[in-house]
Image (cartoon, rainbow, N blue to C red; front, side, top):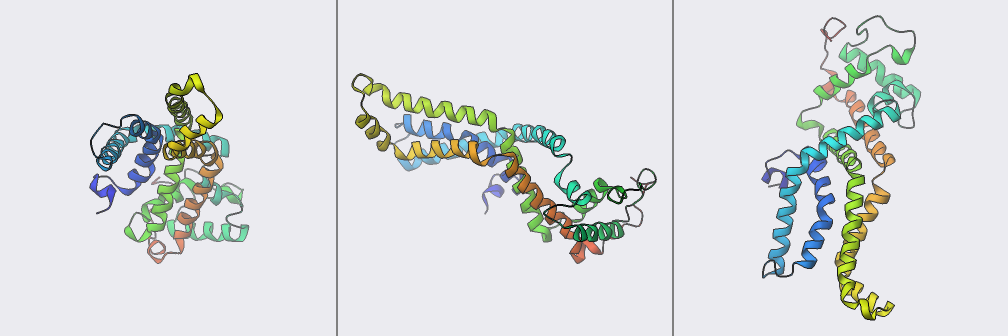
Length: 261
């Protein structure tokens, strides 16, 4: 049974909320593993206990991770000028050239029957449809199990967005844990410090230090706005291309219009 089912949560919540929380908490787990050698007798059991505790705390913090991610998304939306799916429908981009974009817009208008929403059609072609209404139609039409790629891309985007949302606090805490770990390891040799002794201590605990540095570098160099935007574009592309799926194409919505939205 998959881990998320064992925990009693859906795959989106696990990937987009619990995993970011676990990454943020991982330096604490490394610290406890290093400086609580007698937590339990068996090393394997100790790792299991710490991992289980990490997952439980991650589950508890998942709603807060979502809140930080939503707040960051609002900032990104304002900075980008809209959400990726809306931008791909309304403007030419590297993802869709202009003929392809127009093809999808036209097809989506025909299928969803959404064109004249809350007023008359504007003169500008890119504003002659309600992008938000079309996106809502696409989301509702792609909730089934046959759209696993879309669900996967959505979870990937949610994970990256939430990681960016907690980046500042996680980066600071990771740095503090690394320095604290280093301080406690070097304290016994402070009176006879040398580079040789320093590297001997570091290499004796190469695994925890490697993990801490890797986590720190992940927050610094991997979790960025461009990283989130890339995932957003992939999700948006998969969602828009769902219009080519026969299951979506047959879902004509004749009743959708300005009187129903």
